[in-house]
Image 1 (tube, rainbow, N blue to C red):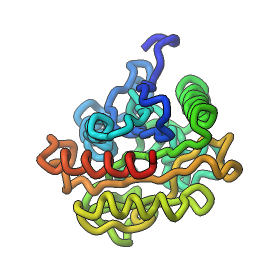
Image 2 (cartoon, one colour):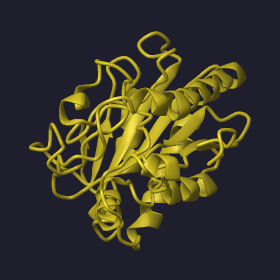
Image 3 (cartoon, helix red, strand yellow):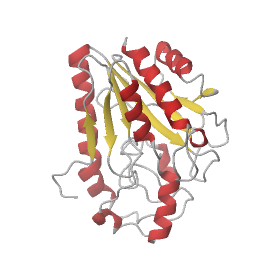
Image 4 (cartoon, rainbow, N blue to C red):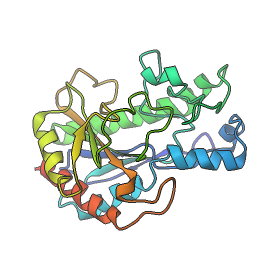
Length: 265
Protein backbone atom coordinates (compact mmCIF):
# COMPACT_ATOMS: atom_id res chain seq x y z
CA UNK A 1 0.00 0.00 0.00
CA UNK A 2 1.43 3.36 -1.02
CA UNK A 3 1.06 6.38 1.28
CA UNK A 4 -1.53 7.90 -1.08
CA UNK A 5 -3.78 4.86 -1.09
CA UNK A 6 -6.68 5.11 1.38
CA UNK A 7 -7.18 2.38 3.95
CA UNK A 8 -10.97 2.72 3.93
CA UNK A 9 -13.88 3.18 1.55
CA UNK A 10 -16.71 5.69 1.81
CA UNK A 11 -19.63 4.34 -0.21
CA UNK A 12 -22.30 6.84 -1.14
CA UNK A 13 -25.88 6.52 -0.05
CA UNK A 14 -29.00 8.57 -0.68
CA UNK A 15 -28.57 12.30 -0.32
CA UNK A 16 -31.35 12.46 2.26
CA UNK A 17 -30.16 9.51 4.37
CA UNK A 18 -28.81 10.28 7.85
CA UNK A 19 -27.45 6.75 8.27
CA UNK A 20 -23.82 5.71 8.10
CA UNK A 21 -23.22 1.96 8.36
CA UNK A 22 -19.76 1.73 9.86
CA UNK A 23 -17.88 -1.53 9.27
CA UNK A 24 -14.49 -1.30 11.02
CA UNK A 25 -13.44 -4.91 11.61
CA UNK A 26 -14.42 -6.95 8.54
CA UNK A 27 -11.12 -7.01 6.62
CA UNK A 28 -8.08 -9.29 6.89
CA UNK A 29 -5.66 -7.23 4.77
CA UNK A 30 -2.33 -6.27 6.37
CA UNK A 31 0.18 -4.20 4.36
CA UNK A 32 3.62 -5.86 4.06
CA UNK A 33 5.37 -3.13 6.05
CA UNK A 34 2.93 -3.66 8.91
CA UNK A 35 3.16 -7.45 8.63
CA UNK A 36 6.92 -7.17 9.19
CA UNK A 37 6.29 -5.86 12.70
CA UNK A 38 4.03 -8.77 13.70
CA UNK A 39 5.92 -11.61 15.36
CA UNK A 40 3.46 -14.42 14.56
CA UNK A 41 4.37 -16.84 11.78
CA UNK A 42 1.97 -17.09 8.85
CA UNK A 43 -0.19 -19.99 10.15
CA UNK A 44 -0.50 -18.36 13.58
CA UNK A 45 -1.41 -15.04 12.00
CA UNK A 46 -4.13 -16.70 9.92
CA UNK A 47 -5.56 -18.28 13.07
CA UNK A 48 -5.49 -14.92 14.83
CA UNK A 49 -7.28 -13.30 11.90
CA UNK A 50 -9.93 -16.00 12.08
CA UNK A 51 -10.62 -15.08 15.70
CA UNK A 52 -10.30 -11.29 15.57
CA UNK A 53 -11.98 -10.48 12.25
CA UNK A 54 -15.70 -9.71 12.14
CA UNK A 55 -16.02 -11.90 9.09
CA UNK A 56 -18.69 -11.12 6.48
CA UNK A 57 -19.94 -7.98 8.25
CA UNK A 58 -19.10 -5.92 5.15
CA UNK A 59 -21.32 -8.26 3.14
CA UNK A 60 -24.13 -7.89 5.68
CA UNK A 61 -23.90 -4.10 5.43
CA UNK A 62 -23.71 -4.19 1.64
CA UNK A 63 -26.77 -6.40 1.34
CA UNK A 64 -28.65 -4.29 3.89
CA UNK A 65 -27.88 -1.18 1.84
CA UNK A 66 -29.32 -2.87 -1.25
CA UNK A 67 -32.48 -3.89 0.60
CA UNK A 68 -33.12 -0.61 2.37
CA UNK A 69 -35.74 1.75 1.00
CA UNK A 70 -33.42 4.71 1.62
CA UNK A 71 -29.85 3.71 0.79
CA UNK A 72 -27.53 4.35 3.74
CA UNK A 73 -23.97 5.55 3.45
CA UNK A 74 -21.26 3.02 4.28
CA UNK A 75 -17.83 3.57 5.78
CA UNK A 76 -15.81 0.37 5.48
CA UNK A 77 -12.32 -0.31 6.80
CA UNK A 78 -10.22 -1.96 4.10
CA UNK A 79 -7.54 -3.17 6.53
CA UNK A 80 -7.47 -5.60 9.42
CA UNK A 81 -7.88 -4.24 12.91
CA UNK A 82 -4.44 -5.77 13.55
CA UNK A 83 -3.07 -2.74 11.64
CA UNK A 84 -4.90 -0.26 13.87
CA UNK A 85 -8.27 -0.48 15.56
CA UNK A 86 -10.07 2.70 14.52
CA UNK A 87 -12.67 2.34 17.25
CA UNK A 88 -10.28 2.47 20.18
CA UNK A 89 -9.34 5.63 22.02
CA UNK A 90 -5.78 6.44 20.91
CA UNK A 91 -4.67 7.25 24.46
CA UNK A 92 -4.92 6.21 28.12
CA UNK A 93 -8.73 6.43 28.09
CA UNK A 94 -8.85 3.06 26.33
CA UNK A 95 -9.61 0.26 28.81
CA UNK A 96 -8.40 -2.41 26.38
CA UNK A 97 -4.85 -1.18 26.90
CA UNK A 98 -4.86 -3.44 29.94
CA UNK A 99 -4.80 -6.49 27.64
CA UNK A 100 -2.55 -4.99 24.96
CA UNK A 101 -5.40 -4.02 22.66
CA UNK A 102 -5.43 -0.26 22.44
CA UNK A 103 -5.49 1.47 19.08
CA UNK A 104 -2.43 -0.60 18.14
CA UNK A 105 -2.57 -4.17 19.39
CA UNK A 106 0.48 -5.69 21.05
CA UNK A 107 -1.30 -8.88 22.18
CA UNK A 108 -3.53 -11.43 20.51
CA UNK A 109 -7.00 -12.65 21.37
CA UNK A 110 -5.29 -15.32 23.49
CA UNK A 111 -2.97 -12.74 25.13
CA UNK A 112 0.14 -13.91 23.30
CA UNK A 113 2.64 -11.40 21.93
CA UNK A 114 1.54 -9.90 18.60
CA UNK A 115 4.15 -7.14 18.16
CA UNK A 116 6.67 -5.23 20.24
CA UNK A 117 5.52 -2.40 22.46
CA UNK A 118 8.28 0.14 21.85
CA UNK A 119 8.22 2.63 19.03
CA UNK A 120 5.64 1.09 16.70
CA UNK A 121 2.34 2.58 17.85
CA UNK A 122 2.74 6.24 16.91
CA UNK A 123 3.77 5.69 13.25
CA UNK A 124 0.77 3.38 12.76
CA UNK A 125 -1.57 5.85 14.44
CA UNK A 126 -0.25 8.67 12.27
CA UNK A 127 -0.42 6.64 9.04
CA UNK A 128 -3.73 4.85 9.53
CA UNK A 129 -5.70 5.87 12.64
CA UNK A 130 -5.78 9.64 12.26
CA UNK A 131 -6.73 9.74 8.55
CA UNK A 132 -9.48 7.21 9.21
CA UNK A 133 -10.82 9.24 12.14
CA UNK A 134 -10.69 12.45 10.10
CA UNK A 135 -12.59 10.86 7.20
CA UNK A 136 -15.23 9.45 9.52
CA UNK A 137 -15.60 12.87 11.12
CA UNK A 138 -16.06 14.35 7.65
CA UNK A 139 -18.71 11.77 6.80
CA UNK A 140 -20.70 12.65 9.91
CA UNK A 141 -20.26 16.38 9.27
CA UNK A 142 -21.60 15.95 5.75
CA UNK A 143 -24.72 14.14 6.98
CA UNK A 144 -25.33 16.89 9.53
CA UNK A 145 -25.03 19.52 6.82
CA UNK A 146 -27.27 17.58 4.42
CA UNK A 147 -30.07 16.42 6.70
CA UNK A 148 -29.43 17.92 10.12
CA UNK A 149 -28.62 14.65 11.85
CA UNK A 150 -26.41 11.61 11.59
CA UNK A 151 -27.02 8.04 12.74
CA UNK A 152 -23.89 5.89 13.01
CA UNK A 153 -24.71 2.17 13.09
CA UNK A 154 -21.66 0.02 13.79
CA UNK A 155 -21.80 -3.45 12.26
CA UNK A 156 -19.78 -5.99 14.25
CA UNK A 157 -19.77 -9.66 15.15
CA UNK A 158 -18.48 -11.65 18.09
CA UNK A 159 -17.65 -15.30 18.81
CA UNK A 160 -20.11 -17.67 20.43
CA UNK A 161 -17.61 -18.58 23.18
CA UNK A 162 -15.61 -15.87 24.96
CA UNK A 163 -11.96 -15.38 24.06
CA UNK A 164 -9.25 -14.69 26.67
CA UNK A 165 -8.84 -11.03 25.70
CA UNK A 166 -12.43 -10.12 26.57
CA UNK A 167 -12.71 -7.96 29.67
CA UNK A 168 -16.44 -8.54 30.10
CA UNK A 169 -16.86 -12.01 28.63
CA UNK A 170 -18.66 -13.52 31.60
CA UNK A 171 -22.05 -11.95 30.86
CA UNK A 172 -24.84 -12.83 28.44
CA UNK A 173 -24.01 -13.56 24.80
CA UNK A 174 -27.32 -13.09 22.97
CA UNK A 175 -27.76 -13.55 19.21
CA UNK A 176 -27.68 -9.76 18.84
CA UNK A 177 -25.97 -7.48 21.33
CA UNK A 178 -26.82 -3.78 21.09
CA UNK A 179 -24.04 -1.51 22.28
CA UNK A 180 -25.22 1.84 23.57
CA UNK A 181 -23.93 5.20 24.70
CA UNK A 182 -25.71 7.20 27.41
CA UNK A 183 -25.46 10.43 25.41
CA UNK A 184 -25.68 9.26 21.80
CA UNK A 185 -28.17 6.35 21.86
CA UNK A 186 -31.71 7.73 22.13
CA UNK A 187 -34.52 5.40 23.26
CA UNK A 188 -36.20 5.46 19.85
CA UNK A 189 -33.04 4.16 18.15
CA UNK A 190 -32.80 1.32 20.64
CA UNK A 191 -36.49 0.47 20.22
CA UNK A 192 -36.14 0.40 16.44
CA UNK A 193 -33.16 -1.96 16.70
CA UNK A 194 -34.96 -4.34 19.05
CA UNK A 195 -37.92 -4.49 16.70
CA UNK A 196 -35.78 -4.97 13.60
CA UNK A 197 -33.69 -7.80 15.05
CA UNK A 198 -36.51 -9.44 16.97
CA UNK A 199 -36.90 -12.21 14.39
CA UNK A 200 -33.21 -13.13 14.70
CA UNK A 201 -33.57 -13.95 18.39
CA UNK A 202 -33.01 -12.34 21.73
CA UNK A 203 -31.40 -8.90 21.77
CA UNK A 204 -29.32 -7.85 24.75
CA UNK A 205 -27.66 -4.63 25.86
CA UNK A 206 -23.94 -3.97 26.23
CA UNK A 207 -22.93 -7.57 26.90
CA UNK A 208 -20.46 -8.91 26.03
CA UNK A 209 -19.49 -5.63 24.33
CA UNK A 210 -20.81 -2.16 25.03
CA UNK A 211 -20.60 1.38 23.78
CA UNK A 212 -21.10 2.94 20.37
CA UNK A 213 -18.71 4.74 18.03
CA UNK A 214 -18.91 8.50 17.57
CA UNK A 215 -16.08 10.64 16.13
CA UNK A 216 -14.27 12.39 18.98
CA UNK A 217 -15.14 15.84 17.61
CA UNK A 218 -18.80 15.08 18.34
CA UNK A 219 -18.49 12.60 21.19
CA UNK A 220 -20.47 13.70 24.23
CA UNK A 221 -21.13 17.10 22.65
CA UNK A 222 -23.67 16.98 19.83
CA UNK A 223 -27.02 15.19 20.30
CA UNK A 224 -27.69 15.42 16.58
CA UNK A 225 -25.25 12.53 16.24
CA UNK A 226 -26.79 9.28 17.42
CA UNK A 227 -25.05 5.93 17.48
CA UNK A 228 -25.65 2.25 18.07
CA UNK A 229 -23.36 -0.77 17.89
CA UNK A 230 -24.85 -3.95 16.46
CA UNK A 231 -22.87 -6.99 17.61
CA UNK A 232 -24.01 -10.20 15.90
CA UNK A 233 -23.12 -13.55 17.43
CA UNK A 234 -21.26 -15.42 14.75
CA UNK A 235 -23.06 -18.73 14.99
CA UNK A 236 -26.18 -16.97 13.70
CA UNK A 237 -24.68 -16.55 10.23
CA UNK A 238 -21.30 -18.26 9.75
CA UNK A 239 -19.04 -21.19 10.60
CA UNK A 240 -16.63 -20.30 13.39
CA UNK A 241 -13.86 -19.32 13.47
CA UNK A 242 -13.29 -17.57 10.18
CA UNK A 243 -15.40 -19.90 8.06
CA UNK A 244 -17.96 -19.27 5.33
CA UNK A 245 -21.23 -17.44 5.71
CA UNK A 246 -24.45 -19.41 5.88
CA UNK A 247 -28.17 -18.86 5.35
CA UNK A 248 -28.40 -16.56 8.36
CA UNK A 249 -26.63 -13.75 6.52
CA UNK A 250 -29.57 -12.66 4.33
CA UNK A 251 -31.89 -12.66 7.37
CA UNK A 252 -29.50 -10.39 9.22
CA UNK A 253 -29.17 -8.10 6.20
CA UNK A 254 -32.93 -7.80 6.04
CA UNK A 255 -33.12 -6.96 9.74
CA UNK A 256 -30.39 -4.34 9.39
CA UNK A 257 -32.20 -2.84 6.37
CA UNK A 258 -35.37 -2.60 8.48
CA UNK A 259 -33.41 -0.72 11.13
CA UNK A 260 -31.95 1.61 8.52
CA UNK A 261 -35.39 2.41 7.15
CA UNK A 262 -36.89 2.90 10.59
CA UNK A 263 -34.31 5.51 11.58
CA UNK A 264 -34.23 7.16 8.15
CA UNK A 265 -37.88 8.14 8.28
